[in-house]
Length: 334
Image (cartoon, rainbow, N blue to C red; front, side):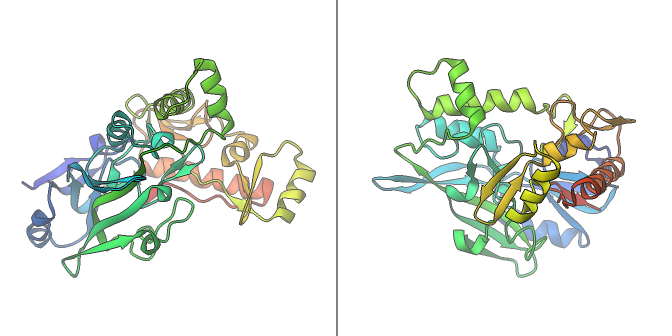
């Protein structure tokens, strides 16, 4: 069923109250062609609405991806291959895996959104990225009306990047994702905050369940709950600079936070933003959270344009103070 002039406030974690000209949902690939033909024109595919900011009413069709299902495709001595519908809740899938002792996604606990959005930006947290457990996905080409399979290499994953955010943006609908999970855990506890939290918890035996619980506790202590304060998690990516640029910055700002990597030094965007005085800032109902400067928030009735404008001010101030250009992690729907 397609409904008209529907508020999208309950369908995006920022809680932005804009309207869609038409809204519907689909729970299988077979339902797509008829819906697309019935309402030609601008199209927006929504999952959990956790990584977008809507800046105005959408004069087109908004389709919510409701494809469900979790099932084992095959397994071998080391791995279990699990296919998950794009409309499944991400954290719900993580919990499903933990209950069965399947390892690999425990560090990605409590990330908001649905499974279909996860490979779009190669979600990551606490030393782990989705690409490390990704096997393949199925996606429906909107123009050709056929299904393609994308392998790990096909997706061209990068830091919060994939072909679906750039080259193929708006061309595909992700239907399902297959993960390759470990039967024998390879735990990632190198991240300082995880080690500290595990110590606080008094964990004796290190398990995937213990790591997941530590991650959940850390996230809840640092990040606001979208059900209480509208937000999309980290709004900006951590920028990478050359080693030479980092040394130059460290000369001027001795306390600057950076992590060496293969392509340069990754800076902590939250630290940069906080040094520019934005942490805890509020103008009307748009603001920068008081516990984590990376998170922009809607305290109630902020519009998407207000939040976008605030992000632009933050970008410019960081560029002026540090000579570093931040990039938004959140997708802007103009």
